[in-house]
Structure formats: structure tokens, C-alpha cells
Image 1 (tube, one colour):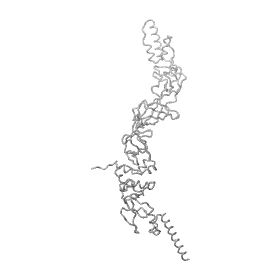
Image 2 (cartoon, rainbow, N blue to C red; image 1 turned 90 degrees about the vertical axis):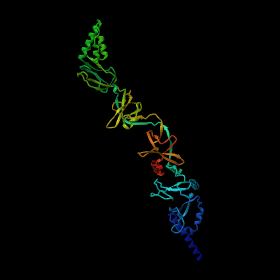
Image 3 (cartoon, rainbow, N blue to C red; image 1 turned 120 degrees about the vertical axis):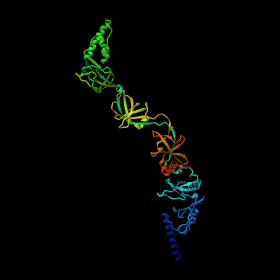
Image 4 (cartoon, rainbow, N blue to C red; image 1 turned 90 degrees about the horizontal axis):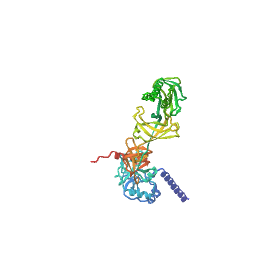
Length: 472
């Protein structure tokens, strides 16, 4: 009976110790002597693979984040565990054998550097004020100034992607507002050059379309009648051999249509009234006369405009004006009819900048056979800017622009990246021209370059090549 009681007490003690160890292990609490009391220290050490390489630092025996560059002991007298080169910590997810081989291939760890690029190093692993681990620097790495190294795992998880620098033509488009205007060369004013009375106005009103030769008004002018009578007298005298005088020229100077002069010459009669006709095809912009009006010499009867060809005046900002060329292609879309587009070319760049808007007028000539384009319509204009010269270009996402300088990240292969300051040229279609800093054989990072900036000490690399140390 006594033996059974002792056996039960022993089993209870073992179970209690095991539970306490399980509870302490899951909470990271070290229980001094527990492993020796349970007799498992030796077995655990035997199962751990032996490290290789020189001892680089010493770690707390309970694997706490406490390190020492020299051998030392814990408060309860236990020695710190020696950590060899192959046993150094790594955050990469790879098989244990591959991890140790890679660590051994990198060589001995020289020191640990601040993860944010600050001028702070440590001979042993440590954390900064934000809890980030210091990064190890192996032999051979310290000599590559400005080179950023990332492991394949981090590159894959961050989505880093690079593309080659290409030589191509950058099509830049300037998008500006515009207004439809009449072609100034196709506007006509129907005027009279002598005092006259409006006998009758044709049924033509503002907005009507008229053809060349259409009767607009019937007028009576004493001066035209007198010149017509003199012309008949000269015609009759010319039949008797008398040289013709200047009556015909006087009628032409008074603006009498050529068909009226020909009718007087044929009939030898002066018409009491003269029909005034349209000098060109177009629309009536203004009608300034009514029946019975008296018109003074020089008065305007009608104002006509031919809209078969029309202008669009686009307001181009001053900063984009240098990219616009005469003859550049342009596309015009009416705001009232966005489903229609018109193709034309830049005809004139007006040599004046509007003081209020800091824009210049650019004139685009468009054919308007259907009369869809009407004066004063608003339009959206796209003008092709730049020339057809091919130049080195990278995607716009590859450029990190701080406002004072621009940087791209070159992909050197094998997880090695180098920041490079560049000078930018024209932009367009998602591309940016590089005038200085890269060559056609380079590859640039186009995706996750800002993550490389944050995670891989880009700031320290930039400061390193931006402010080189003075050499004696």
C-alpha cells in the first residue's frame, strides 16, 4: 500500500513539472534547472545540428534576445551559448540546410548596421528604438558603396519588377480648351460707295445661307444713274469714232456689279434701280438695312461669312508653348457633340501671351463642309507636341522625384540595386525621357521602388553618393 502511494506521488510530481514547463515554455518564461531535473538538456542539445565557422557572439542560454561579444554567465551562473557563423539568425523562409549554406557562403559577419541607414553600427545583433533588427554586413559587402542588396524572398514578396531602358519616341499630347472662330479671310462686307436709297430688301435675314450672286437688295442712287448716263453717251460717241472716256471706270469704282455694267452696254439704257448681290457663298451674319432707308456712302448693307473652312483658337499655357510646332496634328472635339471629332493641323502660333491667363493663342484650320462647326462653340483640343526624335525613356513609375532631384533604381542583378540620379526630359504616354544618368543597357525598377527605398536603406545610399567624402 505504501509503495502504491509513493508511486502516485511521483507521477503527480512529474505531471505537475511537465505542465509547468509547458506553461512556462509557451509564455517564454525560463525555469532554471528544469531541463536538468527532467534529464532532457542533453537530449535536446544532441538533436540540434552542430554549428560551423568561428564564434561570432554569445547568446542567452534560454534563447532570450540578450547577446554578448565576450563569454559571460547568467544571474544564476549558467554560461551563455556560443553562436557560430552558420547559426546566425535569418528571416528568410528556406530549408535549414540551404540557409546555413547561404550563410556560410556570405562569409564572416563584420558588424550590424542600422536598418534605417543611420550612422550607427553594432558588433552584435540588436534592435533599434522601433524594434527593427539591425542588418548584418558580411565580408565583401562593405566595399560596394551605394549598392542595395535584397534577398530573393524579399524581392518576390515586395513585387519588385524591372524593365530595360529603351530608346523610343515620346508622343506628348497637350490638352487645352478652344473656341470656334470664323476664318477672317472668308468674311465679306456688302457696302455701297455712293449715297443711295433702299428700294427693296430681299427676303434674306441674319443666319440665312446665300450663294454667290444672290440678290440682296434693290437700290436707287442718283450718282450711279448719272455715271450710267455718261457711260451710254460715251458708247454712242465711240460708235462715231470718238475715243471712250472714263465713265466705265467710274461705274466700277462705285461698286456697280459687272453684270449691271454689261446690261447697260447692251441695252443702252440706265436702269432706275440696281440689284445689289452677294459677293460670295456664306451665311448672313448681319443685316443692316430695311425698305426705304437712305444709305450714306460707305454704309454696310450686309455682312457675310463663308464657313466651309473655319478656325479653332486654342489657349495653350506658356509652359507648353515650346513643345508646339507649326503643322503639328490636332484633334478637336465639340463639347456640345462629344461623339464627333475633327482632324486638323496647327496653322499659326500667335506671338503674344495673354497677361491675365498666361496663355497664347494657337490657330487650327479645319474643313467644315457640313457646317457643323459654328462660331463661338466651345471645344476640347488635343495637340501633338514634340518631335519624332527617339530618346532614352523609362516608365514614369520608375522615377522617384523629390522635387529637387530625380532618382531611378538600377537593377544590377542577383538582388543588387543601385540608386542613380538622373535628369529628366519630356513626358508623355506614361513615359519619361532621361537625358543624363542611364544608358540603353541598364535596367530600372518600375514597381515597388518605394518599398526598396523604405526597406533597403536607400536614404543612406543616396546621402552617400550625394555628399562624397573628400579624399586627401
